[in-house]
Image 1: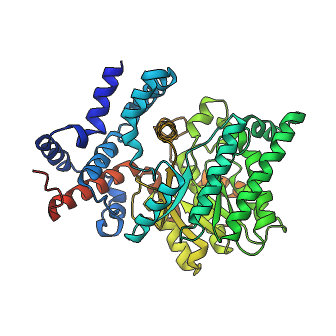
Image 2 (image 1 turned 180 degrees about the vertical axis):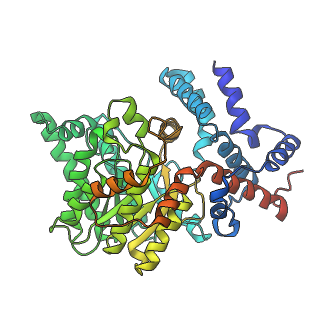
Amino acid sequence: MLRGLRAQQLGKTRVPVFLSTTRILSTSAKLLSNQSKVTADVTPAVSEKANIAYTPFKDFSDDLRQFFLMRFLQFPNLAKKFADLSVALIDRGGLIKQATEAMISPLTKTFSAGATASAAVNKAQQVLSKGGPQLALDYAKEMVFKPEERESVYHETTKLLDEISKTSLLYVPIKLTAFFSPESLEKLSRNEILSEEEEKQMAIERLRLFQVVEKASQCGKIIFVDQEYPTQKKAIFQISQRLMQHFNTHRPVVYTTIQATDLECADLVKQLVTDSSIKFPGIKLVNGAYVNWAHRNHCGDMMQSSKMASFVAYVTIAKYCLRNKISLYMGTHNIVLEKLIDKTAQLFNVPKEKYVKGQLFGFATKNPQTAYSIFGPGSDCVAYALRRVIEGAGSHTAASSPVMNDEAISAMMKRLDLGEVLSEEDIDLIAKAARFNVQDARVDIARENVRAHFKSGRSNLM
């Protein structure tokens, strides 16, 4: 089994390292000749190569590895099987775990900034100096069950803030399941009372979190509080709301994450905006992960019914924030959706500091302003990558058809109750966005970056 996994890994992601130069060039030439198919109604949105081309890696083998990886991820069922098998092998521990992690680690080079805070900051500054995006350095720790490991996350995050304090890097994402007990967050989300020991540990970890945000506030940085599993949503939202009440007094220091896939997304936005204690609310708007997990774990009734329904909520919330000058960090890889919201920002003449856009580093569908990039020990980055592949494979597969008729959209807008109106053009673009294949766009960009090496002579490997 392990031998089969190794063969699969060599064939898909480590080709530049292990194949001969002749085979690299012949294989890449064949694949580069195959143009990805894009549906006709969204072709204009992805054909503007000059506007969406992502900054290529400097090394030819890195760009070629990126191309093969993006091609592999066009087959989500195969990618999920690969990730499931890898997780099973890692769970066996010992030499099998070490060998599997060693084979998968090249995957993390696509979106990882390094093993330590210092290495990550150096990488982020290099990317920025070369005209790349501002990296939001995300420590690859989540669902941390041991108190001593959560204390380690606190120290690593503090170290990161020390490292970026005198740089132009701005953003620090944090996951509260790495600061607090995941079980305690679930209990609080169910309105259950914590034990005396849990309360004591929670108090210690709450103080650490406040110290981290205080440090970020003092050195002019921004904290993104990421949302995680639906069963922890309520507690995570309440903690981030308290952080906003305390720190967002003169500027938006803390942004909380709103997931458009969440049925309660608009209600959460209204809670923040109507909270008089929050002077400067900050919202990080994403479509949302964990959709498949929610359906597999009997939480499907907490999710929107379809991708188009999520996009309707996404656009409506974005319009509401932009109209009311609420600081918005918009995370999306769907360039059709982004262009729609860009028009709204231009219409309302939104200041650039109140409308920032981001994508995942290494998975971009254009050259973004900012990009999430993980850092941390190799094993953590591998685990993070595998979780994302498993969850990302076939997102919304458990949801209904993306088509919504006028009556369904009208009912949804009434439920969102944000006072926004979607035009016919908005609805047409949302429908196109729901049909847009993000992974095809990534393959197109990866292909163009490899071609750029051939055209410029940087692939002189012969």
